[in-house]
Length: 303
Ligand code: AMP
Image (cartoon, rainbow, N blue to C red; front, side, top):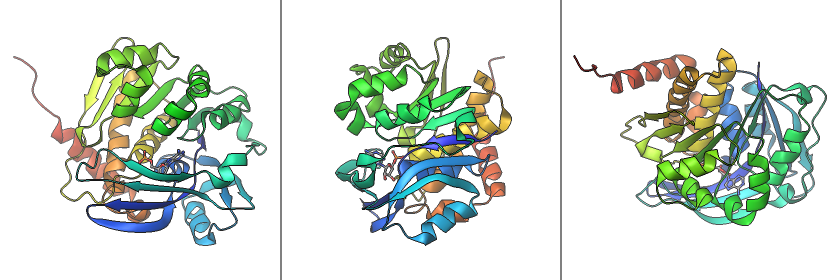
């Protein structure tokens, strides 16, 4: 069925306790589309500057991502600079340069407006809504955001959320968006903003999914070597949405499986900087880790 995604395509400069990289390929749209491309067709809507190298475009094309909605504009590509301490669950943003995204007006190429599944990756909520309004009859709309937009564009974000079925955010963002410290109460507040399903990402502590009637919890895959958590959230969303799109099933049972596929994809991303690990992973490794995940959480019921 395929997914239409709007999000950032970026140069990231990242420092973790295990190393440092400058101006490597990153961005919410990049991580999401690469991850979901292991499951389904992906159409990417974004903008890059004239400084964006063709090797990165070739990588995305090799993953069979449709780039006809990726504009090249005069100017510099989006840049993000972040730092992680030993607590790899929390990124500290040092610098955000919107550059060509500041004036980006997304226009969907022919055929894109028929998309049935839309993912609004982390980007200006006004752009998220502008893309969504061009899609004729979306069946499933999911969305991500971050503290930068919750603080800076709250009203626009609340407007976008009214059209969203599934919101995926991290723990700190959920508390900030709801203005509530307790996660269960925060989830209830957020479910009142529009989304029917809320997926809260908790880094190495896993994921919680809330609907009006149920709560589901999944752990994160226990890894010995975590180098760079950048993109884990977007990669999670890519696996989650990719599985839903491929299965054409949006039931709660399918979402539980999708959460595990998302967690599996994120577990690969954090093993190396940038998209390096996603460049080498093959589908049999994804399935293998899915099975290990299942074994990790299997336990007998009461007699
Ligand atoms: P995450 O999955 O949350 O670790 O997302 C990290 C990615 O988000 C990085 O590759 C950044 O380029 C991108 N990013 C950081 N800040 C923003 C922002 N304000 N808008 C859009 N993308 C961003």
